[in-house]
Length: 85
Image (cartoon, rainbow, N blue to C red; front, side, top):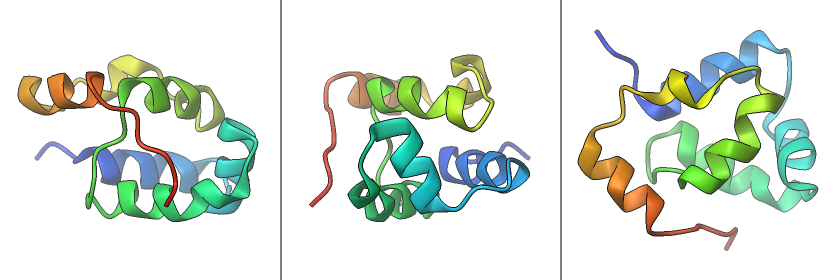
């Protein structure tokens, strides 16, 4: 079974031994992104492609690791940039 984007993010973060706060600080330079990262990992919302580009090197993934995302969801992600609430 294919993992969701959130499951992929969470597994990769865990394999790097990083907390959500650490990933938020390294990828975005701002710990307030921790809450957004939590929502992504829970599959509440999908991260944009721009945000995946920032996350991928921190959690040692490539954008190709997210190819399981449906084309419709990817199109939606390409058109929006989510910022922390």
